[in-house]
Each structure stands twice: as C-alpha cells, then as structure tokens.
Image (tube, rainbow, N blue to C red; front, top):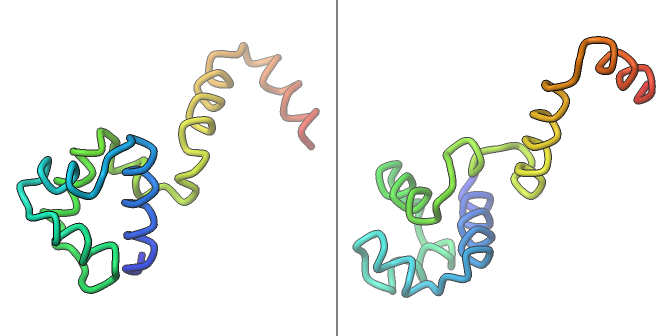
Length: 98
C-alpha cells in the first residue's frame, strides 16, 4: 500500500467519523499540523502512529487494510449471513450467483 492509499483511507474514515484533523490529532497525541502534513502527502506515518490512528478512528486494522474498504462492512455482514445458512440454501445461492 502506498502513501496515497494510506492517506485516502485515513481521510475517508476520518470524514466517516465526522472528525476534524484537529480532533484526530488530539486523539493520537500529535499536533494538528501532523495530520495536515500527513494528508498533504508530506511523509509516511510510522506503523506505531498508523495503528494509533486506526484505533482512534474506531476501526480494525482488517477494515483499514481491506482490499475494498468502502464496502468492507457490507461484505462482512453478507458473509456472516451466508455462513448462517443451511448447507442446501448455501448451495442454492451459489447456483443462483453462477
């Protein structure tokens, strides 16, 4: 994952949580300029800080790094529903999808 993708995801989840850059910076014990510079692609955050950001955004690393983070929750919910189906219904669903 490159810097652009990391920043896009941070920005997406920050907006989703309705957090300003200042709010996020306070949650991770950094200056507001840290988030501003990060979102301006000035540097790549350390893994330690990235995981602090993920925690502050109240998401899981799995959600942050998911291939399609935009639909992650819906995909996960759908998979859980499919897992609860009886075997014959799962097979019917698979045939339908094919």
